[in-house]
Image 1: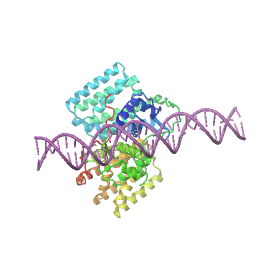
Image 2: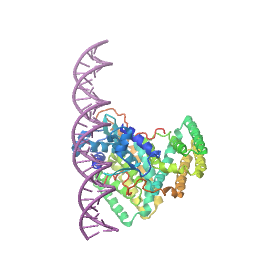
Image 3: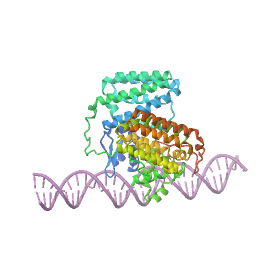
Image 4: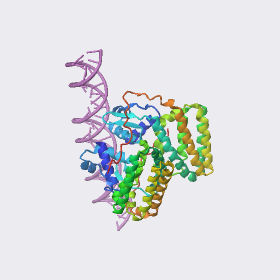
Length: 233
Length: 233
DNA sequence: CTCCCTCAGATTGGATCCAACCGTAACAGG
DNA sequence: CCTGTTACGGTTGGATCCAATCTGAGGGAG
């Protein structure tokens, strides 16, 4: 049940129904979920560990807000991890999985054509994660998943910039091509380029960060993510 | 208070006072910590997210046990992340920090000479993390920290293999040298080699994994780390 | 003798209750 | 009029209580 609440809350955040910076009141969530506050508290500690929520003791939780610097950080990390993931996955992808990826790719382009940013964001995510299906590394997948989640708000914003779809789509095609050729080296390279280019594109559009308002009151002093582990021994 | 319990429990695990596979009873921990079970439950969800503990619903928590495959996974990830970290850190390290690193390096070698594996493990960790002090990326640091924690049990075992200290020490010296020359490229390269060689060394000593006994009863079916996020939207 | 079923003990997970703490607003004093 | 203080309301965090579930032992049937 704690898991249910966690997943539902996470979805609310990822889909933007809860805005970054917005206060999350335990009681309100509990009422909406039809539970007591206990599972909500569990969910909040989980989401805090995932970096989707910031909690200050005796004050409360807010939807995490990523600064430009943190966004770059996440993308730098992804630039390292996802090429690894795809190169390990490439040799093990089945023909069926490749076919699915091909279809997914068309769905993405369709979503772009009918100008459905929300669907595009979802499908794009799904495409990339599916390219890692040939790899059995739960920890790595978890990390990548978490990184995607953390930047979700900006991916949604990015999807509303019409101009860049073309480039992303051709990069996707290149990735799929490398996968079909079972070429881990190229796949890895293109993956890295794809992520880096996205990062640079986001940097160019720093107006996306103009919305650094407080969203729902309160001075931002952050206290965000996991605490310092292992102080001194 | 939940944080206190989390940190203390984490330390118990990292120092091996709680053996991998060992059952963790909420009530027992609560008694030892002098609290109720509530903060313990919070600590367990946190540690589960960090991968130090595995929890099965309505059954309980156990200290996480890393298989050989997962160990390799962690080291592959570290091979990607730590070179990034050190290359970002190198340009910003102060002379004072470099001096500290030099001293730390001597302490490590001292610990090896007097054959104090426990101290060696601690100092080695501290050395590497301090090489990242020039970098301001909390998320990356957190991930690296977590990866080190996850493999702590094997690092302790590794430190009891006398033969490999020499190589590790010379690699450390090479890293320090690159840092002193403010050469991110070399630092990054050596870091990667260092991690990869350690991984291969651990692989050679697969006898360390013979201890795949159940430690404290119970069939292992795992359910270990963070759940699958974001099923389908 | 073995296997399956049932039941009791133990342990976890959720709900409720209470204390500690923070932020705000009213108020008093300068 | 402004500022510092204080008290109140609201929210979080911890303790306690209760229900739900799993494990293991014991007994009965084949």
